[in-house]
Length: 541
Image 1 (cartoon, rainbow, N blue to C red):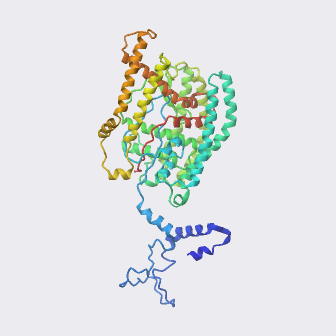
Image 2 (cartoon, rainbow, N blue to C red):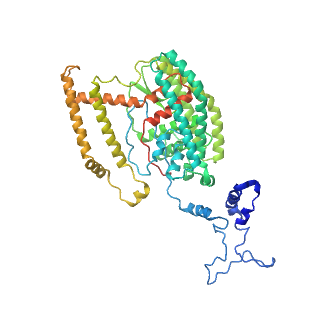
């Protein structure tokens, strides 16, 4: 074997051993039974040779006198043998999916419902809205990220942050500018940035492929494809009455298709993610109606997966344009959903070809949808009662700062509690008995008793300062108690801070004048800034 590799043609250079080794590994199952007989004993005559004769197994049966058909090291070196033998004992593989972007202005949760499974790698937080998030999660969890991919990710990340900061700075400088000046300045920046962002998005699409298929493991078996781990398929026929299990299966297929399904355009991937978010909401509701606010209408806007709320008493023309936008987007998503369902049982190549055809037919309509969204933004800019940050509470700066510090310390403790309640990694979880949540909380309270005491003292001090401020007559006196006033001020301050975290989100969705590429760029930064808790890993069913 080594002599054969050493005599490789000089044209191939140092790659010849790798190429020959791969060829032998891949074709060996096809020729193992024919190229070499079951015994190493070969007679000098051809007529009396008996390839099918069983080898003699005497007293020295364990001696290496024969090479059996199932011998995995016949044509392999030590590294190849380790790979092939380890395939039969693969550890449990966890899949990681990103958190859903919330609706603009809604409260941001600190916790996800308790769930067993591997905690998501912390490095994923920087790529929370990327198309390659799931495959990167699998790589990071398996500690299988080649240096070439690490450098590619770092280069991509650096270029993207530079563009995001450039766009943020321009938007901040134009906050007080008049509409005409802002429109002109943003248009100039869009002409410069849009080609660079488009190139960056192509890099992200290639990273999705490279992370899944690069390296020896990815080439021979595929890396982290969720579809490889499931043995079931969706029914191509759509029934009006769907069981909870069927609904969950369809949700899982749609969610995985965002990353793992070939043939989709980047815009379609974002639309499929909206489909998955809608299906997930339906599953969580479990058929129970959720009371909707009568004064606002919520819908998926642009960029995809961004949701906003608008007043229901909009002018008729603007309301009609929004209704038309929602209807067209719903139609596009229905076509995508039907295609993914109907071709789920087809071969991978047939499914990819069908989705590529659909992508080509939908591309002009998706582009037109962006134009309609820009027209809606210009109309919403003049709506006086759009949801937004409330007026700041009438508090002295010093008192407002004390309340802000108090809330920050309280949030820090909640973050520590969240980390303490996070599920352990599977190996530790299998060896140790799970501690009930109530006991974990009790232990947390004992360990942080001093910090709780400091928080209580600070809250009492704020209440006294607030009472003194009220008695000074600088605010309107009414029948509200100090506790009510403190709660009102805290809630208002909290809303202010929430909307501050949504600053990039609001600009990406509602600021007229940005290109679609700039909106996606800024929206990615906005979702990352929200610091959403990352869902734990899941095992494919």
